[in-house]
Length: 74
Image (cartoon, rainbow, N blue to C red; front, side, top):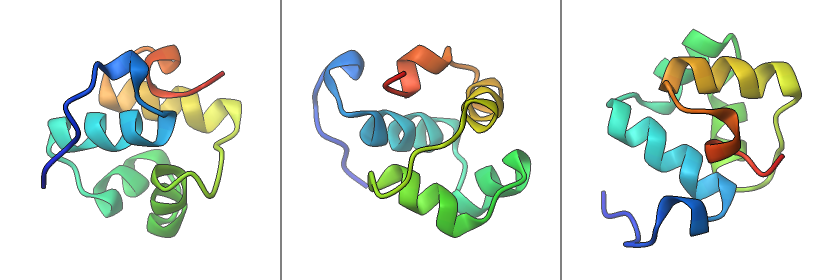
């Protein structure tokens, strides 16, 4: 998988989420299981077709060990 060479904060939130998940070595299914969501929900977040609620953002940020503001456009 090749990610664009752009500074993290300059990327759209869906790319930041995907990059952070990839760097943690998690699949969409693994992240979904940890968050308590469905794999399709993670896929939709990463493609910009869905926006997570505040609680889901917090759980994802904790799992990926990143501040939520780095992962999502708040």
